[in-house]
Every structure is written in structure tokens, then in C-alpha cells.
Image (cartoon, rainbow, N blue to C red; front, top):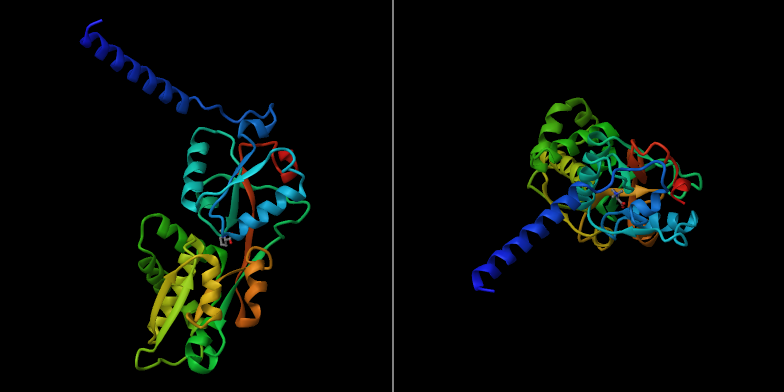
Length: 301
Ligand code: PBE
């Protein structure tokens, strides 16, 4: 054969491969309610970053429901990768099981339902707590009081998260929220006076959508009363360690009693727990609503 024939053959081979791949991705099977779920998704739960409490809880759930023996596994990724996989699956009505939680825009944007958890591995509802460093009350009483009085609802947190998800800069989204809720901000700043000299304050947070929202909102209010606030994103364990070692002043991301339980028990004696800033959060496994006969974690078996 001459070389031009070879070139044509090679080009054809590429075309055929590309064609086959494209066909593959567009014909991935839809959810089949008549077949067991496990084989349809390779017994895989799509998770987020390995350091998240929802991952630890899901490992516990796999054991508690006897799913490990049935080949089920938890695939770590990131919130962004998980939500993008979820979006694509939903567009094609394919089966998928994800680690889910509210407040989060995934429950606003996608038709999702939590799976029932009869063994109560994830707990019923969760509260998010504000955690500050020891000595903050004496060193920065005005900031301490704002942090202590900070509280909002899942709907309010979601509104900031949705704005950020829609492309708004988190600091801008937080400013817009603060501007729109003067009565609420008045509650958080009740009895607080403006501070002079721009004292420095550091908040640490985990770059999850919920924590990006709450941290930016609190930082905005603290800046309005005169503090020079720095916010720094880090992994979960360093967030707790930073407040314990006083490298940071506060964090507003402790999901309790379940999701952050391990870190809470490791650090609770070295920090000050200012209590609940949001009630009615929830963590668990979630599936698209069109998976009609999958309603409980038991149904994964
Ligand atoms: N989350 C969101 C976190 C807490 C906030 C559920 C992803 C977790 O530790 O799992």
C-alpha cells in the first residue's frame, strides 16, 4: 500500500473511534426501575472531598447498612465535580447516588430527594455552630458579640449560595445580602459599638459553598463595625487548628452534632463554642426524584 492509502486508513480509524466515543456518551442507559440499582452505577456513590464530614458519615453508613459486602463504594471528588456529574446524569435521566446536604443550591437547582436513613447514621437535622478562639471575648468584645449574635435561616444562606453559584463574587453577594436585611443585621449588631483603629481579625473557613456564604456575610458585618477582617480558606482540620492555636479568631462552619463531630471532639477543649448560627441543616445520601423506587438507603442493597 502506498503512504496516502495509509493516511486515509489512519484518518478513518480516528473518525470511527471518535464516532464510537460520542455514541457511547450519548447512549449511556437511563435509570431502569426494573433492574437492581447497584450494577447500573457500578455500586458507586459519588462523593466530595475526602476531608468532609459527609464522607466520614457515608463510610459509616456503608458499613451500617451492610453495603460494603455488596461491593458498594464511595468515590471521593469535590463538590464542583460531584454537582457537575449530577447535572449531566439528571440531563440524561441516568441513575446516580450522591452525598447531599442542605442548605445547598443542589436542592434548589435539581429535583433531588434525600434517602431515608432508618438507622439514623447521618442524624435527623444538624445545626451549624460558631466557634471562636479562647480570649476573643476579652481581646475583641465587639467582634465577639457580633459572632455570638450571628444567626440566620437555611433559606437566607441558600440565597447567598445561589447568588455565588450564579457567578456573583462572594464578597459582593455578602454585601448585597447585608444591604437587603437591615433588621437582621441590627439584631446581630445589637449593643455593639463601632471600633476604632481598624483592629485585625482573621476568620478561617472551608471552601464549601455554605461556608463561603456564611464567612463572607459575617466578615462584611464585622468590617462595617470597623474591623480589618481577613478570611482564609483551608482544609477542615487546619480550620479547627487555626482557632485552637489562636492563629485565627473565628470560624462559622461547625456542622453538629454529626458532620463535624470528629474535629469537634478533638478541639472542643481548646476553642469556645458560641452555639448555633443556623438550624435545620441536613446531611445524607440523595438521588434524583425520577428514581422512584429508591427511597431509603436500604433500597441500595
Ligand atoms: N458539607 C457542607 C460539610 C459541612 C458543610 C456537608 C459538605 C461536611 O463536612 O460534610
